[in-house]
Image 1 (cartoon, rainbow, N blue to C red):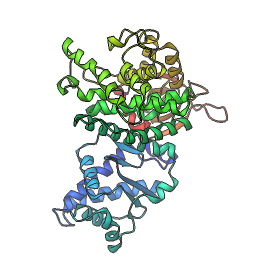
Image 2: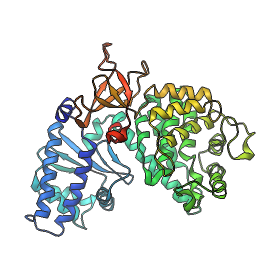
Image 3: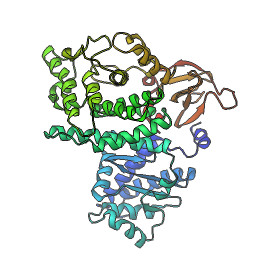
Image 4: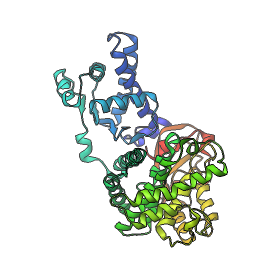
Length: 462
């Protein structure tokens, strides 16, 4: 059944295939540096890589991989939390100045061996790699992704690059703060412009990326997810571009004050003591002070950073700011912050499913959160938010990948387990409500992804 799913959507490469290809290439590069071509340590990973690429290239004419702002990608799969092998490959690309490689139909074992050998050489750089590939007569591998860039769909691929760029930008801001510097605002400004442009074209474009959960880099990952959710909500509400820029900037930087919190407090696995909690609470005003000094920011942005824990009923913190007049932007960031925190695994927090998180937000409306804005957020996410695992009346299991603004009970889904219980590695995309008015299926219940061992993010962004 997995093969059937791939044939129906032949361009798809699964997250598992993407990761396996990266790991095999890394193993090949390492082995060719120590063993002759006939050695099993060289032949085995290269033969497996050649077979995997041949299978992928039966579905499409070429595939591509590389590094964007330090994050490895293969087509639309990005590895925000790579394993050791993928991280090693990404580092090798960065050391050589390589952004991307394209592999085309017909690539064979010998070409992969020669390519791996070139990557293993210390004197290979982006400046000489293309020439060396030509000298060796290699036609199935080339430097760059020119043809891909010319025809790439912004909605499918640009979003993952924007996410990776945003992650890198927030990290850079944090590094500047750790070094005692006030960060520049230019890099964040570029990211914000890109995110706002995408959200204004289609507010659902970025939503799936909020399911990326990097538990080892929670603060940065969480900040970008809050940025995604807040700007999507603003676009859904029809806000003007400048307001969206302010909201997105505030959301991306809302937790930047945590950079100055002691690491033993920030990363404590259990409940904070009263003294530790008081120190943690300082991140809001510390962050606001930093943001107020950054180029390209304004009072609205620094106020939103200051007040994202103030609560709608003003019983939050900082206590001294409870009587301050915080606007919609602060309350929108608070909702996005709350939703992402609830759906993320932390040492002290069992994650909610997206559906339960939306229901919980509704219960917090009027006290912690603005009721009107929560209502709009719930409407935007739909009855079954992106990332929800559902059972269909066909007995298939599917992940919700896009809301349907015309019918919240009929979102776009990716079927990941067929009616007989067989797992579809690549997934199969379906619109529950089709253009002709017919239905593919109906949702009968939600499913706990942990019980089915489903990596939601792999399907939502894959």
